[in-house]
Length: 102
Image (tube, rainbow, N blue to C red; front, side, top):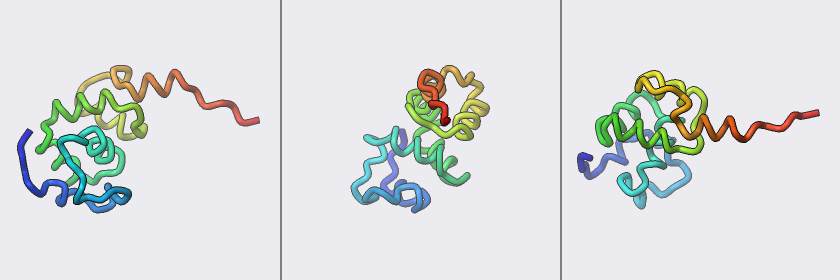
């Protein structure tokens, strides 16, 4: 991974509204950062994540995430060429169905 001092300041401010960005370690918390970027990030946020973490790292982290929005899963699956069932969030969602509302 490339070390860039202020990479967290380049992400959209709305991604990390619930944490203190000055305390955020983008290397130690890469699952959190990549998950937020995939779910809520802009095109610029995605490009920044791919350039900072590298594309294969982003895909591997995305495979291990327990939750990911459906559109984010479809996006990362399409650009990586991996089938959706290789992603943990897809298999986890299938194993915990939503109960019927009567």
